[in-house]
Image 1 (cartoon, rainbow, N blue to C red):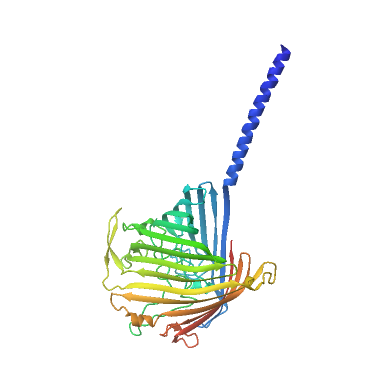
Image 2 (spheres, rainbow, N blue to C red):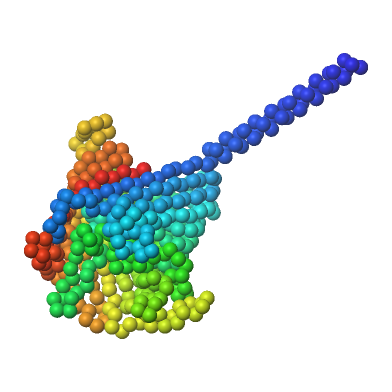
Length: 450
């Protein structure tokens, strides 16, 4: 009996042990699969610009702008969480005091903060994704040197608060992406000018420094904050929402890829200033539309393309009714014109791999070169004192830019030169404080993109 009992106990122990080991192996495999399915990818973008010469200012050899973006994307199966913050390194017009934009400061903005859900995916790689939170819709591309995008290029869509559907897949050999978003507001960045004076009918521009019209902010928002911001649902209390859509694709052509982007956004009654009205500062809104388009060719060692952007800011409207918990109502200002700001450009860039130079200065080091031509146009229609198209055309600015530098991996250093010209005298001459029809700036860019 004892022998039989011992055999029974031994058999039971073996069975339990096998089951336990199998269960443990299953748990370990599930944990490993979960670990493989989940991953975190950090992101970092740093750029700093230093002026070596500026014909509109007597001062030179000074810091112009700096920004740091830190964030990351975490994925676990069909779920995604993404966040990104942008820090302004004492750039004029960016501050985190009680009145942002009024003094130099170390400003901080949330560029992205959303949760994503893969609603559909298949073995061919097609996915349908939904994003809820703050995201940045896909915009067009500016080709060429840094100045091509820093001044007259693709400013890109600002951070949006809302919900987005995004499809990514391959159709007939074309890598295809489509987005559609509904957001609180449509913040836009304009390469702003001062507006026409009543006697000279000339718009004036500032290249850098204290007023920072081109690189620190603008009349209708920029850098994710300021006017036309999307930070609060209060800006959507007009009953209107912003609608944004983009379609992009790329296909193999020759030894490279041909790529194109078409994007468009619109919102009626887009609140243009602070959402709290005062006696002297009424709430103002405008109907706005914004579009970006580009087409280019990208290959090993070089790329080139054309781009176009346009922002339409309708007549100003003043708040007439603000029902508690209800939609705001506005009335048009008959004296206010409709303004349209447009940029069109062409540019290209390349590196020394085209000449077989792949280890310049250090292993993996490359020389870079770039150039671009772009034009800025501002037109008005209706209202009191609006310029005719022929008068406004004399204030159009054309920019010629050249760049050259060094890159290694994710590091980039570039010396930029830009020459600006117009028919009218729209630029300040630092020598005698008079206006002139041309301007020049030379600056150094140092960047890192992870």
